[in-house]
Picture 1 (cartoon, rainbow, N blue to C red):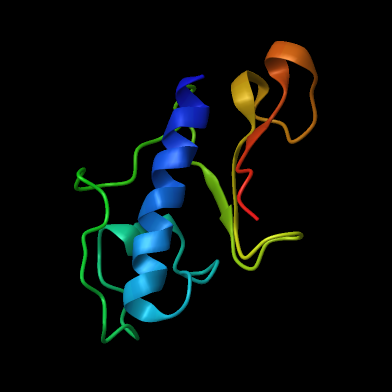
Picture 2 (picture 1 turned 90 degrees about the horizontal axis):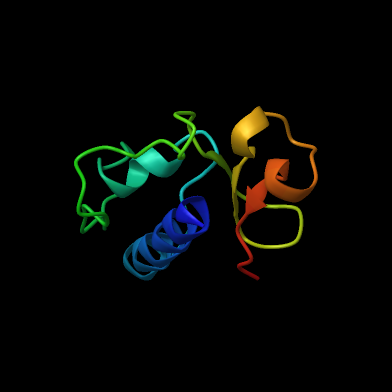
Length: 99
């Protein structure tokens, strides 16, 4: 549940980034673009998160961010307690649901 709430917070911050910059951060810029201006972003008006750094998932690992995503402008995921992209039940990956 905590990972899903954090992913929703990232999604809100990404939407604010998009409004200011006309694009989402690239995969190479990643989620750090929400707290530190990317070098090629002249319209950045952040930070877009209240924290000074990007928090890790509840298991202490970084969130996975891809832009563009497979079925959406971006994807954010935590691979859950196992740290593996596959799993079921309590060990399943937690992903953004943004379209």
